[in-house]
Length: 449
Image (cartoon, rainbow, N blue to C red; front, side, top):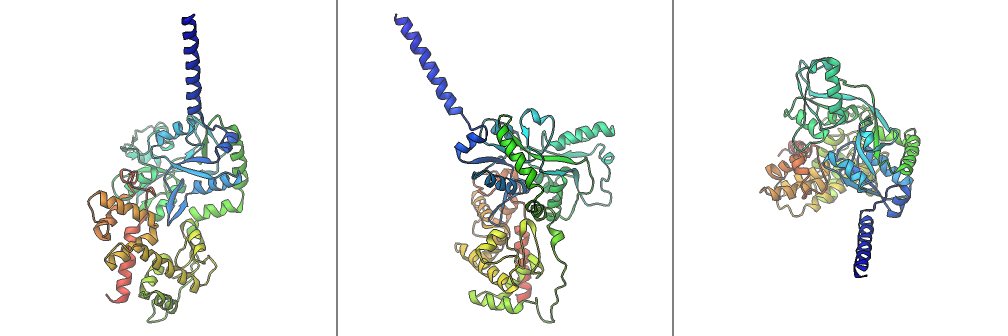
């Protein structure tokens, strides 16, 4: 009798334990369960096409699509940035995320791990190389060349197929820590490697940051770019497919593509006429607004020159607009929009610059503080805060811009730095360091100092 009671008790304990473990491991697989969770979790790559932060705004081509989708289904969007590409599959299938957004090219091999949404974009692969007198113009010219790409990526698969097609060996390699494609493009631009491969849409963005790049050599036919979903999420896939089908033919999507890929085509080529002895046609407005805050007007004029060449109708990356290149969300806070007059644009720009300067009150040297301000205006304060924390960590002076925090801003393009727990805003691949120097030098030139 005692043995029977013991066995029954033991079996009940095992069943309770299994039930407890099942409860702990439960995740919200499909849309109805995700609604109970109360949020849509997206696994993003930290890149220009997936998700990043710029001038204090959450951005990214895929982020903006899925932000619209989350509002379409009435759920808040939770962002989870994944540093290691090998973790996307496991995070998705164990319920840590509901959708993968990593500029995924649809492939048969990956369909075993997860489903793809209908494509939201079509693009092709291009070779990234530096401009030279003898660039690689044809895939045949890649014979015995070394090309660095991400491990197990669409680019790696394409290069291995290309070898078979041309009947020549291509040395396909990857870097330690598996840096993302944008990091590899940076390495090409900085002479660290000679070649990588990218989708053409990302290549165009990178070309605007690095004018020494050549992105003209195509390596593939057009490919479908889509989002990844669990096989156990048919409801979510159906809803996302429905949304993408409608959204991709909307004016909002046309505008989104312009803001990320075709914004330079939207910049009017107006001729700005400047009278002799003037810096700009707006000198009087610069002087009036700068005087309100006790600034030298030539400082804000130098910012406007760098941002727009004094063009009040200029359009920039991600929807930046006007003389001072306000981002839409920041512009609304300062009462300025794309159609605002030069007076309103300059007044808002001067107020923003003054607020940023005040936010760096911990920097004792005025000139250094002005450079922190310029860098923040260009990159957003969050990235400069990250660089300041890294400067402290690596024995540099966190209150000195030149040769200290400026150095760490440049390091934010490298995975070993932007993946640090000290970094809150992720990778930064812009040019805040050269921007601050260029604007400050122009200001000193115009002020005669």
